[in-house]
Image (cartoon, rainbow, N blue to C red):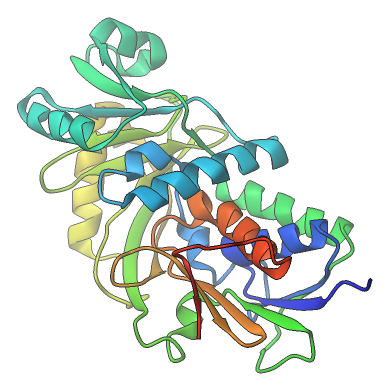
Length: 330
């Protein structure tokens, strides 16, 4: 039996995973994006790409953790670049109440003392008395992961077209992963702005993402290759794509310095901001409108949830999804 043809619109991390999963399962796939260059206009290009389902449970409902755990398995089975060193959560002694609060809202962690913390992150030795270690979590470098998916999609025989202004398709199904590009068609979709820094520093080396808890400016630092780190990220209720504000810049840099003074000597490589698509409850949706299937609202969980959502859509097309609270047929 001939497999249906599918056009996937949007080549951010959600669209990449949809295209990869469907091509892998034998569908005829055409991935299109309006950007001239891969990943250049996607919200996920600004992500820290932490695969942290347990930590995200601090503010997210259980379904995000459940999907995230499934996605983590898929990432590890698919991409050799997954760094499975866990996540370390810390706070200054004066903010220990924040650490206690975080531990009560999440699971999958162990409380570690200063000696254990120093063994995990030698450059943070004597900086913090205690911390929470989420050993099962991981992270990826966004550009490397996206590049891998793009190359693999091509090897699976799918077509990929950039600089493509999509309006309709003669494919059997359209998977719409446009993010904020679909906001005119989805009235409940809103933008959540996230601002970040990319820095380089040879004076401090981290092995895993560090989440620094603070009552006003919580922050995370994600280590990439060659001494590069991503520092982020603000969560601002706005769909404005403009430059990073001075207030956000001061908050992020001051908090990074509070983690370790060595960050004060870092070279700033990039300062930028992206807008994440989100529904009112910050939970993604799969909206079925005839032959169009909309996958949107991944909020700050794009890398964390994209593989599981792609699996869900592929199972739906195969008729093997019985019930899912994420799927709405209109």
